[in-house]
Image (spheres, rainbow, N blue to C red):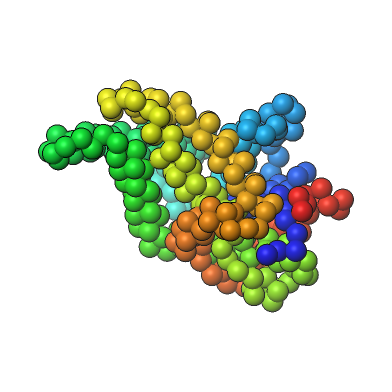
Length: 312
């Protein structure tokens, strides 16, 4: 068990890492030569602007909105860093015209379209498809199996999620991003264990962290099974719509459960966090020293002097 628990979290980027502290958010990027550059990411946090939104069982979804906003900015910076060295003459005539006349607006529009398509695909795969498949199964399996609907749908959603993560982890660029994820976890562990933030100390830390976003996603999927028992509809569209309405509730409950598990080390908290720690074997890889160095730079930039990040 760590000596202390911090609220500082992070996000792996393309050839970089973002650390989020109580006052500052900083992204550190590492180039091919190992040089590290940093960028401070500024975005007003809803949970700080409006104190009511920071209350238990309300704050979860708004904390995640804040996280997504900062993550989006950090990923945009990460993409810009990767293309900084490209020569303009390499662009074709059409690409050059689009870059000169539209530039950032085109990039933002493309990312917006990609986000919408991604959300639509997620709704189909994680909500519509499991319900449709169970309805088909009901038509061919003898007896009343309606009571198994939520379990079937939930297990299928988890299976799709695990398969998706396993597949993308085979992509070299994604694997490197997962290595930065490992650097993030190890650096936070090093800080929580009250050790100096050096590459040597960080390298020795564990890479699976109980407060990881991967663990939170899996926890939401598991909570979704429980919620599914209370949704009476079998129509795919009506059931999907109801589940979407329940997402804020699931997020808020999941957020509070994860925070409670962070504060208490007992058999129940270990049981709750175990599936997420197992899942991290796919999303968290061993980093190299350059990645660790970048994580340390980002971490040191967001640690507050007054210890306001510590929750235990």
